[in-house]
Image (cartoon, rainbow, N blue to C red; front, side):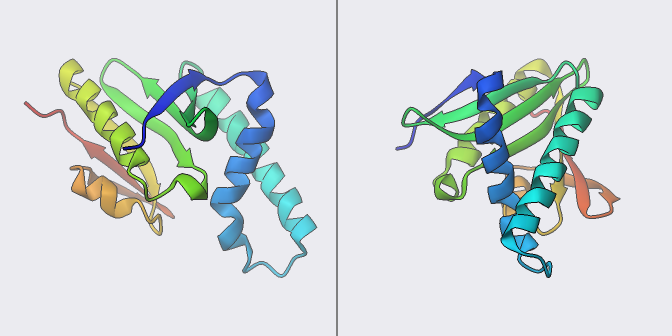
Length: 157
């Protein structure tokens, strides 16, 4: 059984967070007629823009590193408001995907939402392999937002 822990993001995590972002987008970037260096530059710009977007739109969000076997494995950004828990971002390095870590984390978030009587929501890319996991956990599509589905799960119990 795989165990994970969470710790707060700090400035020294920037290289890891950049690597993580690139790893989640690298496959789709293979379709661009660019060199690997151009892809890396583009993805760096996209990561920086996303980081700024999160800073501006979710200033109170908790930003955590997912740690497995004492090494950074992913990130979890949560915005806990009065009426919902928004999963701003959850991502794992490819070598940690498919091991149940994401599911365990999501179940913990859902339990927190249930106890607080709050919905849990997330934007999910329509081609995200984890879409089935979200649906199995009770998330329902609320709105079509271009390449994303806005999904939520109401509190249970």
